[in-house]
Length: 278
Image (cartoon, rainbow, N blue to C red; front, side):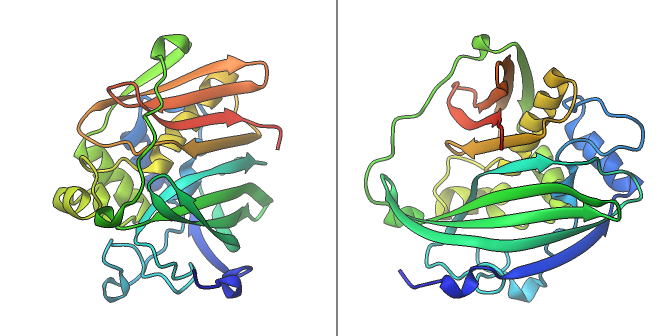
């Protein structure tokens, strides 16, 4: 693979406002699956809807994302997904806050998996208000080979029992839910709304449920069970979640704090999450 060392350390900034409209849209999209918060305080994971990238239509790649080679490196693999990440919450976001997000490319690595070649791009985020940094975050983005170029054999699906968890939220993964979240985050990735593209080009069984949507629900469930937003929360994608089914967001308290999963209708694990010590 090409050496992408020149992208390590690349940064960019973007700013936005926490508006009453965004708060209302977030609540209308996720309620009743949100942690209780005081009036004027943003619910957990709202920061992913702030200051989205807004590339012009003529600069998009074939998947609907901004073409690679700008801020993110032009890795030679086409299929992009969030692989996981970690969120460190230092302070609340509030209605009226002007929020600035600083992104820095931390690393670019290549691996060979059971389903073919993989490229991982790690990006650090600092989300700050005029009061200081409110959230520090690591995002892990994975790129995979084209669907018709897969090599190797996928691992057997990992399964879990929703009955082993003390709290379970049933969430209908409707196309409307996916559309609303894509709209709030200005996410143009076609596999969230273009079913022929998702199935015929990227090779999924149906539209794909957003990774950050699943992580948002898990973080809100963690905050609900713990009584407050956990200081540090990590999540890891296990397998793609597809739409047009009811999926489960499951969580339980542990000695370490919280652990949870999202499960599809067949109890396949799609994402795992837990609180961490850092």
